[in-house]
Image 1 (spheres, helix red, strand yellow):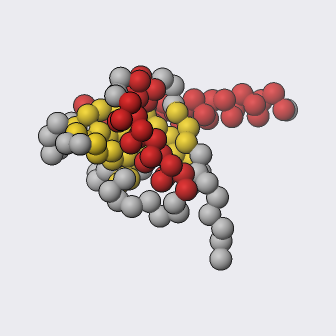
Image 2 (cartoon, rainbow, N blue to C red):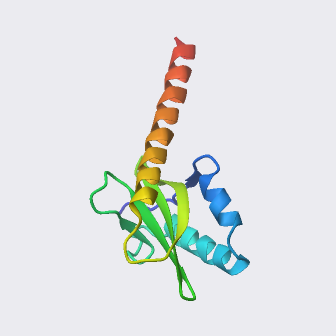
Image 3 (spheres, rainbow, N blue to C red):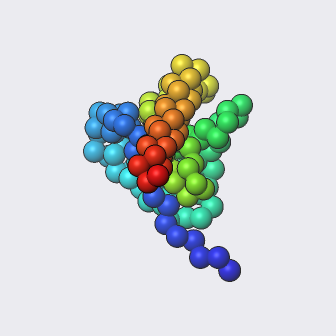
Length: 126
């Protein structure tokens, strides 16, 4: 049986941190709880993490506190790494298209930066 090793959580740029710091202490605690679940549970329940239909590998972390719903966009990198992007407080049933568009843009930015830094390291070796 394969042993599950903890997932790392990587923050891309400052987007998530900006969102996190705007939240109350109680909401921050709930976000940290969901992070802990994602780091330690192999199969994360859908109530905490769900794939966004119609996107290529974009997921949303789902945080509920009192009657507020928060969403934090992320994707996987190498199967284990969860990468966090922009977050927002959800005020309607439907996730706003502009938030999804921003998350997709940030996802591309993350992988492009990673590819560039990898290419730079490869060039330095040769």
